[in-house]
Each structure stands twice: as C-alpha cells, then as structure tokens.
Length: 342
Length: 244
Ligand SMILES: Nc1ncnc2c1ncn2[C@@H]1O[C@H](COP(=O)(O)OP(=O)(O)O)[C@@H](O)[C@H]1O
Ligand SMILES: [Mg+2]
Image 1 (cartoon, rainbow over the protein chains, first blue to last red):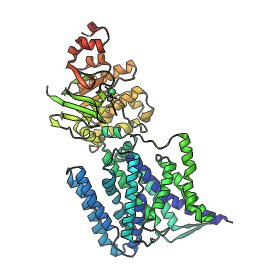
Image 2 (spheres, rainbow over the protein chains, first blue to last red):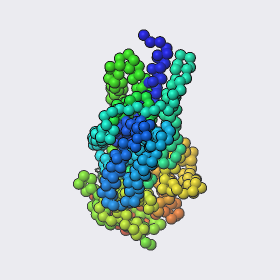
Image 3 (tube, each protein chain N blue to C red):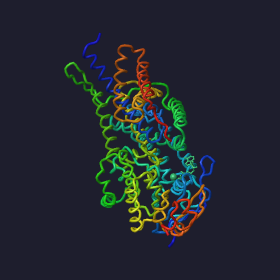
Image 4 (tube, protein in one colour):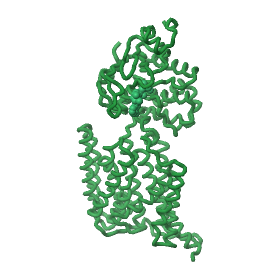
C-alpha cells in the first residue's frame, strides 16, 4: 500500500517530468503551427544535449561537435543550391561561421570545468543550432508539401540522427550532474532541489515564450504565420524565416529540456525519442494547437507515468501511451481532427 | 504620366490548366485603374500573380524595375499591397494586432512613426478604433473589409490592389469604401481595383480593362468603356444613357 509521503513523492516526480514534457509539447505545437512539420527528431536533440552536458562534467570536448559542423556544411550546400547563390553571405554566417564559432568556444571552455551553469549553457549552445540547420536541410525545400510528406521527412531525420547519435556518443548512457543537492522537508513532502530547479526553469522558459509571443512584433509575426500564412506574406512576413525562427526556438527548448532531464535519469543516444514522444502525446491531446492545453496535458502524462511506474512498472510506457487513445477517439468523434488546410 | 505598374503577358495556370492567358495591365502613378469581368474570368488569379502569391509567366515592372521573380513578401517591401477577396486577416488576433502586423515592413522605424501610421488608420476608419481590442474573426463583413484595407495601408504602399472590396457588403458600406478609395488616390496612392460592380468601378477609375475567360477583351479610359455598347449590355444593365 502507499502512504501520503510516497504519493507526494510520486506526484513530485510526475510534475517534474511533466514540466519537461510540457516544454517539448510547446516546441512541437509551435513548429507544427508555423511549418506543419511534426518534429519527431526533437527527442534526439534532447538526448544529445543531455549527453553533451554529462560529458562536460568530465571536461570532455563535446562529442556532438563534428555533427554540428557537418550539419552546417550540409545546410550551406542545400541553401546555396536552393537559392541559386543568392545571399550567400548571410547563409554562410548562419551555417558555417556560427557552428564553427560555437565549436571553437566549446573546445576552449570544455576543459575548464567552468561550473554547472556554463556547462549547461554550452551544451545547449552546441545542440540547439542543429534544429535550424535540420530545417534548412530537410524541411525548407518542401514548404508547400502535405503534412504527410513532411512527416515522412521528419521520420527520416529522426532515423538519421539516431544513427549519427550512436556514432558520436557510443552506446553507453550517462547522467548529468544535478543543479542542486539540497533537500527540503515540508511536512510529509520531501522536495528535492533538482525538482525545484526543473520547475523553476520550465516556468521561466514558458513565461519567456509567452512574453515573446504576446509582447514582441517578431513573436506576433510567428503567430501570424501560424494563423494565416497568406495573410502573413501579404504584410511582408516571410514564412520561410518564420519557419527558421520556430526551429530555433524548438532547438533551444529541446536543449533546455535535455539539460533538465540529464540529472533525473540515465540518458542514452536514442533515449530522447521516448521523452519526445511523451511531449508529442501531450501535444496531440491539445490537438497540436493550444499551448496551455498542451502544458496541462503534459503534466497529466507525467503524473500518469509516475503513478504507473509505482503500481505497474512493466507497463509504464504502455499506460502512458494509452492515455492518447480515448483522447483521439473523443477528438475524432467531435470531428475536429488536425486540419490539413493547405 | 508614367506607369507605376506595367504587367505584360501575364499567364497563370492551375495544375496545367490556364486561368489567365497573356494579360497586360498597367496602372499610372496616382490613378485608379480597374479590372471588371464576370465570375471566373481570372481577376483574382491575376492579382495574386501580380502580388507574387502564385507563380505566373510574363513580366511585371514596378517603378520601372523588374519584380517578376520576387515572392510576395519581397513585393510588399517594394511598395505593393493586396487586399484579397478572402481578406486573409489574422482571425484570432485583435484588430490592433492585425494593424501592428500590417506595419511589419516598417518594424525598424521609430516608434513615433509607427504610432502615427496607426493613428492615421484609426482616423480613416473610426469603426476600427472602437473595435481595436476585438478579435478580427468576430468583426462584421464591412468591418473586416475596413480592417483588411487598413492593414494593407499600414505598409504605406505605393500601389494598393483591391479584390472585390464591395463583395457581400451593404450599399451604405460600399459607398463608404469607394469614398475611401477615392480619398486614397487623392493622397497619392495608386489603386488597381477589381470589381464585379462594374458601374461603381468605371465611375471611380480613370482606366479600365474587361477581363473575360482569362483574356482582356476591352480596355481604355473608363468613360469610354462606360459608353461602349458591349460593356453597357453585359455589365451595366439596360440603361446606357444614364452613365454617359
Ligand atoms: N486555387 C485554384 N485551383 C484551381 N483552379 C483555380 C484556383 N483558383 C482559381 N481557379 C480557376 O481559375 C479561374 C479564374 O478564377 P478567379 O481568378 O478566381 O476568377 P475571378 O476572380 O475573376 O472570379 C476559374 O476557372 C477558377 O476555377
Ligand atoms: Mg475573384
């Protein structure tokens, strides 16, 4: 049987992982709304950041650097081909110079043991730029393709990244250092410092995203692209640049999620897929449309996962992914399946 | 007067089926030009092609420069604007946000300049000022048309293209809209007006073209077209003398 303190501990675990799933769900909803891409490879970015963050604790030069540089070179070639040589300068800046600069910084900073905050920031800086590079390589060339074609491209990118992840990081898992080892006792509840950090960081990130979308013109332009692509073009917003920005945000969110999850569980090169999939479940429950609903659904997913891990740990994943079935049924009955409007 | 917009040989096809066959139109600086024609003639397609929203063959010169290959967002930056038949508002955003985004092209201007544009838009359409906090999707048809025009004007275009601005609106509102269009011309904005309401379009514009089956069948000064028996019979009903 279970007493109150165990229940509270399970709820805490659930809310903590749910918060991370919520971040990922936001990234998925955002990317889908702006580009109609279901960003399955978000999970790989999570595990790459977690592994990079764990490696930096040992003063290791990030193993993902060759991947970052290779993706940059590929994105440059793809972009130069697609634009037939127009605006090569800014393309080179974003696909060659920026990754090279990040790699340079990483090589310099990695051996220094510069502290958790710097290591976390560096891990994100190494992995997050891969998202816009993947956009340039795989998704930008098909702006008007159907959702299905884009989904197939996303699955392709996911498979390729999983293989490349094995190549970079090897099959061993790793666990990153916790941000804090403090433990707070509040009556029957034992609150870990890491849990507090995760909830603080996810809340701050969500607030920052909210402010960006509601208060800045760039954020409004991104929302406008999602609401009416043609309307956006008519006021001079380039859907292509909106897509790039959405992928940048998704990369940063995935990076943050990776750093947050690294101390909570041992992460393997392919482990992010399941984590991303749980964010995806939450995003689907929200109909790939509503941000607040996606966050709420992610918290439910996290709590269901944590409770089922206690009662039926063998069936944990089955139970979590089954949550989606009644929701899909309800949605199809209400006939508001995700629209394919273009 | 020199031509602000000079489009020649515009062709547009949907999946291989031609909707517009080698159409040429031009708009002089500071004038209203109109295109009239029946439903399905290709008017909306022509405007979408001129705006760069859909691919088209032929050549588009704007202020003497060839803009044929540019996408819509780049043509906005040159000073073209289109209010499409579908309006394409940001339905789940407020009126104020729609207007703010209309000024996206000038996002690096001073705050004072952008506020002036916004005040000018509200002065031109006081109804929008009353509704500024409301979602665009909840506006009435007339208000939606006003917002679409105001949003386009926030970009400070040199040429405003209007696709059937009177469609589905009550006569009083239509009168207001056409008055606004005339006012814009007087402020130096050139207008390319597409209308099925041929009488109003010919009365307002200096030059006009008749588009039928994707081809221009008649074009010239609007007064001349208004007196042409082929136009009076097809588009102006049975009272030719009244217009002349
Ligand atoms: N998106 C589209 N796909 C296929 N055919 C189209 C599309 N839009 C318009 N058409 C066709 O092109 C022709 C011209 O349409 P349109 O430009 O809307 O005419 P108008 O605005 O004069 O009524 C019509 O035959 C119409 O069926
Ligand atoms: Mg039309």
